[in-house]
Image 1 (cartoon, rainbow, N blue to C red):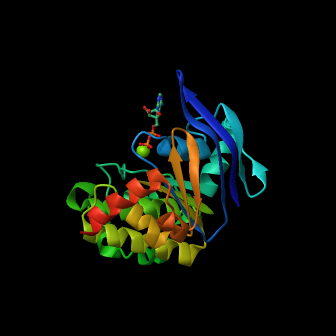
Image 2 (image 1 turned 90 degrees about the horizontal axis):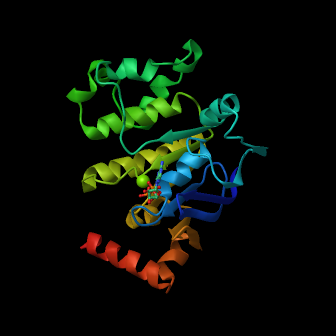
Length: 239
Ligand SMILES: Nc1ncnc2c1ncn2[C@@H]1O[C@H](COP(=O)(O)OP(=O)(O)O)[C@@H](O)[C@H]1O
Ligand SMILES: [Mg+2]
């Protein structure tokens, strides 16, 4: 179980996260929705200790993390893999070399299986990042995370900026990864349609606070003004 208790984070005088609570079991997908700049990326970075919270606690499988203890945070980052919005591969290395970078020998054993999960052919791995599509680079970055055998995966805007086909491929990949690996996933996004298709539960952030938490169905049926305006956005997408 991944649990955030009352996480608060301020930058200068702006409260970005205000007492945010979150609970996620393995094999579950939680979507955290909210407009740009609301603090979604900050939330994910807080979980892995890249940004220390001002107040509140992060618990992973019954153990409290400590962002001030770098050694312990290395273990946390192993348990919670963060997949950044941009794949951030090293240009001068092949995809294979990118995957193997910094790995212990015994961590390479799952490679074939993970390639299968994200539907990537082994042949493509001899190429360089600049020679493959953005979607392929993203898949590689997901495999890079899977190789570390995380129990939770945090996806930062996995579908933002993708065309509809790549978006569907990405969503299918997330579904597959959760099914096969039984990891719990936090997906932060403003892609409400993906949330409704994939999520077991949805959280909506606004002005630092969680303003909705529930099932996709409850989200769709909610008459909260902010949710309605999010859903209108979806209708436009549908059209
Ligand atoms: N390292 C930082 N220092 C100062 N302000 C930051 C930092 N990271 C994020 N912020 C601010 O926190 C707010 C939330 O940012 P972010 O989490 O990136 O939003 P989003 O929901 O779009 O991912 C923004 O106002 C951003 O400017
Ligand atoms: Mg962001």
